[in-house]
Length: 323
Length: 284
Image (cartoon, rainbow over all chains, first blue to last red; front, side):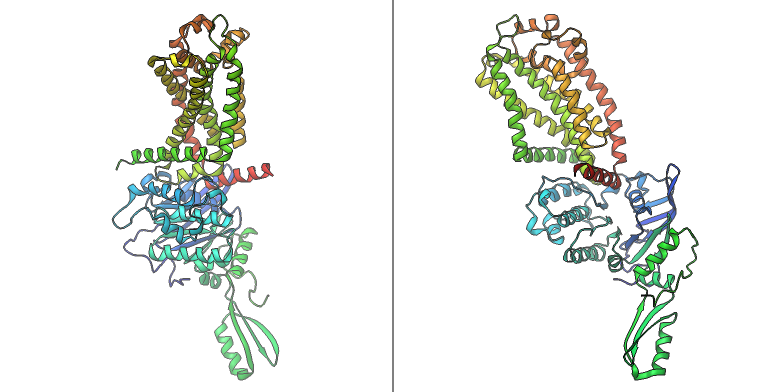
């Protein structure tokens, strides 16, 4: 994981000062039901962003507006410098989309379909971004070499999702949307997929926006995490920053004389220094653990779902030492 | 590189690929053989009956009627069924997510319909030319009329199938709502027996819809003029045939793009997901 220094800075940004995604005060209502109540965020080129949030928080709506598949009610949205509602085919060619529920093209064979869909990107090939990617290269990247000539209908759920990822990047997108890409993956497939994401972000300078329910995955992949709850972005930062923002407390565990101790400290470093100066060699099995992303996420979501839309990040409860 | 033309070419390639997939897939082969087999059995039984008032075998009149019916099922039914199914499984959304993918998709749908109709033509004509007397006498003019009825008939039926496929909520509805009216129309349009044998009050109803005109047009192409005696007005009525089919085509082509565009705009990941959930609930 890349731990970035400041918000919004990514080491991969080069040669472009324009944000890949710029969303300001995005609002969406279906009839009288408000789904997004003023969502704002940006993504720099080459940045990997994870969008977290409970079901119904508006993740899919947000992504679909950015993909140009849904019209918004209000707000400013710019994706690769273009308003998605006005996005033409040229713009479309620069974007990759991977959705959850595709079951299409069952009769096609893996390589055949990748070859065919890739052809659509050929007219959009440029000097510094050759399109499309070669089918065999893609197949190897997502680990479907043994299945290259199989009918898609015969693929397992995880293989099918990997094919979807391959199709999503066949046009060498500058921006890739991934909607719960690893649902149904076994651990090996998940690890391979993470490698693909890192490769795209680092080597291809692809901006990636993904949704997931897997917090561990979010932490591994994302330069920056956005949490959507109560129709708003309630947190925006690296996993580290979020845990600091939400809970200033860190859990410290140790043993002394064979007895276990747990303490929740605001200043863990100071606390540990004091601990050693007081007991010295008697201290063993020391563990210092900042609140996990899961702790942070649960606290944030609970706070915003329970209606207290208070945006100031005061600790909801003492964090460490509870488990 | 002309972008649209490039997409059109890819659409044609897609149609050919899917046609090849269809005729090499066991379930499709069984379907093609059994459906056409039934019709061929019907033709065999009709070999010894004559068209009323003539000495032309009834089978010779039913064969072109079947060609007309084939245009309708390929243009209207198949398009409605495929479109609704491919909205459900995400094929359409995939096309939407691909640059110029929608052009390629629509071209493929049209071309695949045409290919499937022509496959039916080939089956019936090979049968007719080998086992029925009389088709060998058809001149160039007749074959040209057949081609014209095929093209105009496809234009008269396909846009309506596309609209139905865009409007229905599920692939099941797409099949049901296209299959039922199609069967009814085939029943009243003089496909398997001359329309003069049906009650008079059905005639005006049948003549509103393309199926009757498709059958009539195909019969006019392949039958000797004497056979027109069994038709309404004892004439092939070419003007009315192309007039009615043309009308359906013009209105359909005027409306379809608007309906299709609206449907395409609504396609999104959550729409596909919702349909998948519904299909799963109904399926199991």
